[in-house]
Each structure stands twice: as structure tokens, then as C-alpha cells.
Length: 142
Image (cartoon, rainbow, N blue to C red):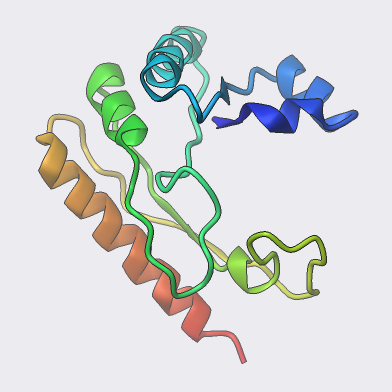
């Protein structure tokens, strides 16, 4: 799932469409959520995974942003485990900056969250796992 504007980038946009990326018009919240649900169900029917950043955008290191409802809606609708992933990429690819710094991006694939949790419990578990692991990854950098 990615913001629709990225489809306008030459080559990247074409490749994204070709590989089934789910574009989202973030200005059209209810309509966008329905589109994510429809595209997520289609991806599941094709045996594909759905990758979504729960904050809805990149977040600066150390900043907190609420997790968006789309991730919980997909979790509920698709009824499959969610595999959270933590990254430290914000150390090298800062938000709203064109220049990227060199460094080794670390990623940690976390314990899956089984289907069936209530929305609030799911969101709490998801946030705790991702934020805890991200803090650990960021702290490991020299």
C-alpha cells in the first residue's frame, strides 16, 4: 500500500502498477479505506501479501504518530496473521528530505499477531511490538 502520488514517478510508478501495488488517495479517507479493503481482498485471493506501514507515512526517528485504521481494517477483513516488521531506515532516509545518508538499514521481522483480536487489542500489540523493536534497532547504531 502506498500513496497514489508515487505512481507519477517515472519507471517507479509503472513498475509499482505492474507488480500490484495498492495506491491510496490519502485525501479521500473513507473512499481510500474502501479501496484498500477491496484491493487487499483481491491480493489475498491471488495469494499475495499486503505490506502496509501502519502510520500511513514515514515518521521521523523518535517521533510518534498514531497508527491508521487501515491496518486494523485489513487485519479484521482478511482474517490472517499480521507479521510486524521494525526498521531503522529513518536514521538514513529522513522524512521530508531529499538527501539520503549512507548507512546500513536494519530490519527485524517480529512474531506474527494471530487473527481474531479485537481492534483495540490488535492495535496495542502491533504498536508495542513495532515501537519496541524499532527503539532497539535505532539504539544499536553507533
